[in-house]
Length: 299
Image (cartoon, rainbow, N blue to C red; front, side):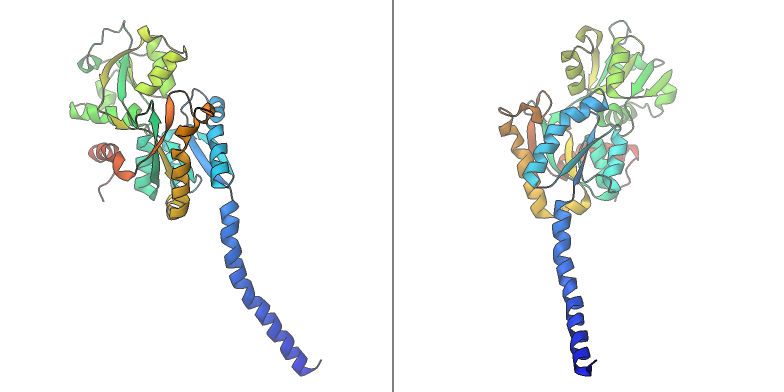
């Protein structure tokens, strides 16, 4: 081979190799932009199948607005959803307030919007009993059976536990005759059926179960209600939050849900009226309760 030709060939190959680096760097973002976004949703409905069916239209809407596939999956505990957002299994999440604060605290997840329920971004934790229990106040709960939600639940665990602590009840397992940890729907069902003396829930769930005929209003008595709490958070992973352009598009898409409900009511469950942009500061009451209970460590 002619030495000059060989040299030219080596230079040409080197040029191709050198050119491959900027090409790959250009192509990688494009590939990332088209990769599916994993949307985790808490178990807001009585079962996984109904939950998936309820939130699939929102996932499809977001996929169209964001120009990327959105894969929906129901996570059946608030604690599990917080962990999945923290460890990268989930990119986007519609989650309870305490679950969001856990994910924010442990992995920097960030809220971008808060869901509206009948036009309001707030709701209430409640404690319910049945009319035959003889329980009229929280003082009457001593020695009775009581159910909390899972320990990732705002209204089912965090807020009532914090309130009990302020009342001097620091060990619920000793204060009550028996303590259960279960799902919100099961709490309402078992209390109404006189299988449990009382339990923690939230007003939206109780209202929805009454409207759906799952419990009778006269079998569910509210004996305590919290101060207003921030509604469920729509959050993104810490990695996604760094993409400010993406966050802006996502917030715009969520804000527009409200105006589209007249023609696309399937985008949200009944009584949910859209989303409003909120930031981490909105969830301070939840964070304060977590700090007071020692579940969160002060920075």
